[in-house]
Length: 79
Image (cartoon, rainbow, N blue to C red; front, side):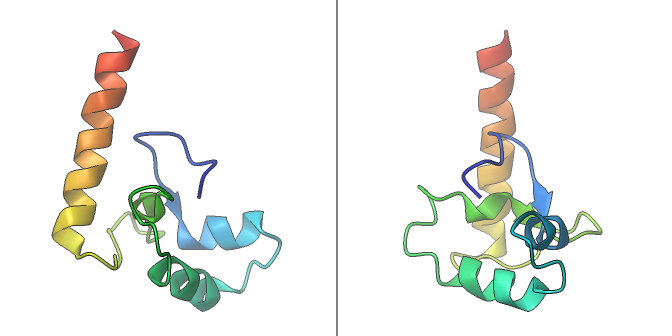
């Protein structure tokens, strides 16, 4: 998760592949849910393969807002 750039997302499936366990989608989701520092360790950047948000321990609405905020920050930094 820490390697997912600011303002970008990665699917649960792709994250599972990157850690060497391509079929461990549920394990990835469970680990993200148990993240004790969700704002510091950006688990909100992981989404469903379809592009839908998926779950978030602090609620989907906050996940959506965090992703939108990061996109805005990225725009500002690249200006």
